[in-house]
Image (tube, rainbow, N blue to C red; front, side):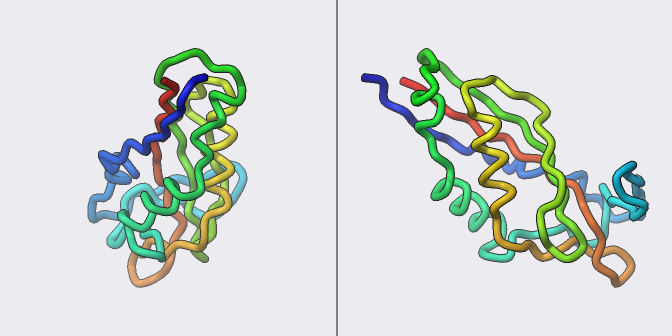
Length: 141
């Protein structure tokens, strides 16, 4: 019987520091005419405890047994995700950048989409949408 472990790699690459620099660069998405900022004066923050709360949320809500249930062989399965924190603090689009299979990307996406609201990023005194990145690692022993 395989044991499973789920690790959240948080070199808090919760954002590869979310490109947090203090200037006004922005990008416009095709899906929305509103700008999504990649650099801002105050970056978005998980509303229930900041980075530590975010790690706790993911760890408590992620089903680490998913790769085992999908018959994954022993090994490390690293999922890379990018997601948008909307200006109202909700989670918008979640994009999988690297999917190792065995249901891992779907599980990581599910948990991020289900997260409580965030404190949105702020630029020039107003709330703005921002992009975050997350790495989630599943280990099957």
